[in-house]
Image: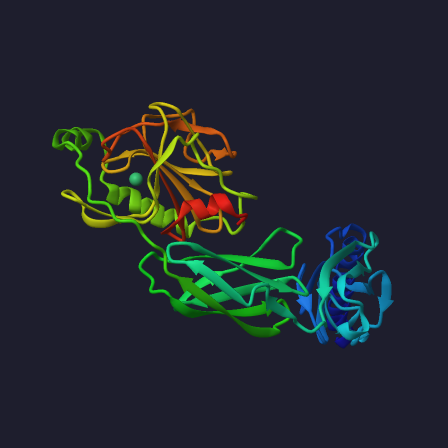
Length: 403
Ligand SMILES: [Zn+2]
């Protein structure tokens, strides 16, 4: 009686075992997915100091048979190796970066499963060791700069830095590397024409990639600039009425520049001095002239007016990207170039535009248009402006020294 009951049960068990074994064998023979390796505590291209706790996670649908790790191609010992044999394995590794040289290293992990195919995967992470002390200093301990001009501040470090943030007159400014491989960082700080002369302090917080910080400061002497005065000039009433028919308000231009300054690339698109954008016969209005006109009242001319014959070529004063090419009421046909790191040059009153489009990268000397008198102008001239972080500065300083 009992045996009669047991028989089907035994048969069932045999059947189940056979099916289970079949699945196992099938899985062993056919499994083809690669183990997935992920690393915690170490990231590609990151910098590290002192001790580093690295976790190696290997996940697979099949049991893992081996995991090996290599530091600069030499095998390393891993903790919790008894985990191997499971599908999901987590191993730890303590990496003491003080035993490594400064600079670039690589960490490589190889994992294999125990299926017939011995599916194998590997992961390599390049990283940097930085156990050196952070050294940084201003190249100039004191900057002497006129009102309406630009401070070109430089900081040299002994290593590549994560960032430098400067504070001048409570406004933040970024420093950028002079070139891709340079440890000299530079910053362009515009001084408003209305800033009072005197001694100021430029502060900078320097940070490397492993969390070291140092604070620096440099004196800035703002010198009084003798801004010339002019009585004013008259633009025919009829001309402005005509301009209104064909142009946009200058508020549109100002809003657009404000937006482009935020989006300016983090690196200089130029090198060397800026060039005067026309073959100058005469500078008719110098930078900073104080004017009174019926339309604009009392204001300062924060640009230079350059003269040559009508319709002569106006070219790009430096390499940059065309961000604005349009007609505005006061500035007439206007081109704006973004030179990177918040530096812009502006060309106004053009007769017409050259074959350029917004978005084009132009080289120093590329034609932008021809000298004209569109907009608020009483004669043919080029109104040329340079702005740094949207503050108009003396463009002549940019033609005289390498920024
Ligand atoms: Zn002007």
